[in-house]
Image (cartoon, rainbow, N blue to C red; front, side, top):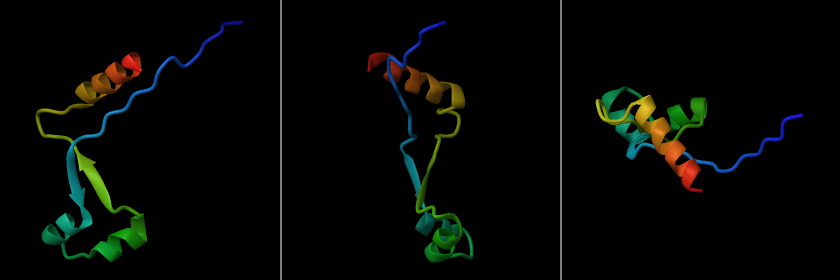
Length: 67
């Protein structure tokens, strides 16, 4: 039987925060409407042409290896 273990954990969260209030400026909606239906208050957006799935995954992997 193989013995494995988790040696470290890592994550990456983009810096750019988009709130429901930001979306209210773009759409005919409200913070309450979004929260009631999705439970979401804010979300993170990757920087266009800078943060890709591979760069974010690599950052998370580096954190896991350093922990």
